[in-house]
Image (cartoon, rainbow, N blue to C red; front, side, top):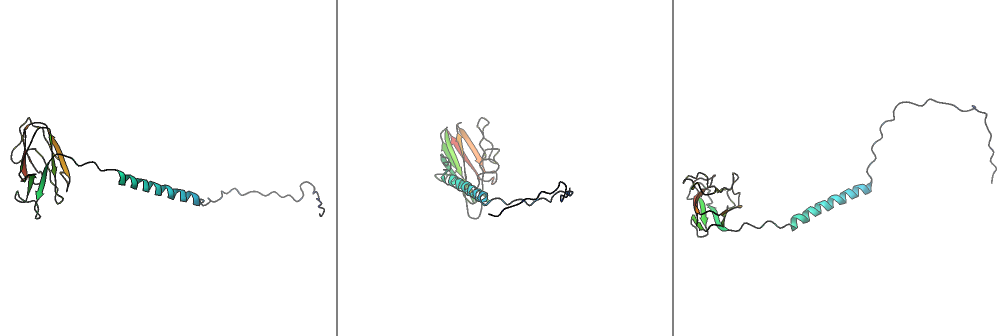
Length: 173
């Protein structure tokens, strides 16, 4: 092994003192995220999407309302008169006879929106002691169903607020 020698210099000799710059360093570019972090984020997103998909597939839709059916019918030419649209019960008539406590389900066909209201109908209002029923201002949208349980006996006249010539009666005994 070669021998190393150190030579001492006198104090202050060969030492230079320089002033340091006082200007701020330029901002460094942000470091890119690590590859592992990006992969972990992708895996989490995929798991969330798959979880939501499984939830949507496995959740059962609410059962359709059950009750005495009333359907809304219309012709292919549209709903312009009482001859082209209306309400009908299971036998094809416009008068439905039920007992108190029975639920009536009004189903709209998939072509047009309709409504059910017992407000001041063109054929006259209902007796003041009868409760009101109404499918709302949006009506029964294309293929949907509105149901109402009739607990008070009486004659209920109703009509469609969109097609006022459509009218029918439910007689509750």
